[in-house]
Image (cartoon, rainbow, N blue to C red; front, side, top):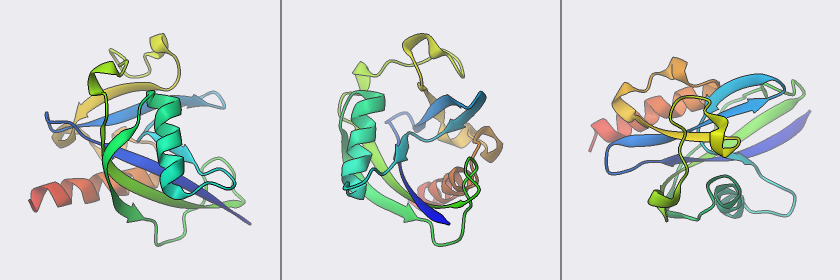
Length: 146
């Protein structure tokens, strides 16, 4: 058994939308929150910013730790891996510079493809991974408590 540490950003904007990433891996399409794996020698926050630079071509701002998994979650891709996922809330440093898809899985600008979705309209079944579905519920709850 191996541990697979992942870091993700719950990036929101002033229009009460959240940024989603549409990706393809091993011939399968899925929607998730932006982010990815922590590399050897890298801290969690450093990995978050590296993933943002690689995928979104910009730094994240207003980052705040939101959640770290506290239960067992097996990897969807490698059954011998246990996932540990860390989520941050964040904003884009250059939101107008982000290349967006016009529809889900619009890979015109490369992979992954990004799009804004109204938080209130996003449903758990719109996301692929169990932890992302849980995060959506926690995010909606935290918004409703404001």
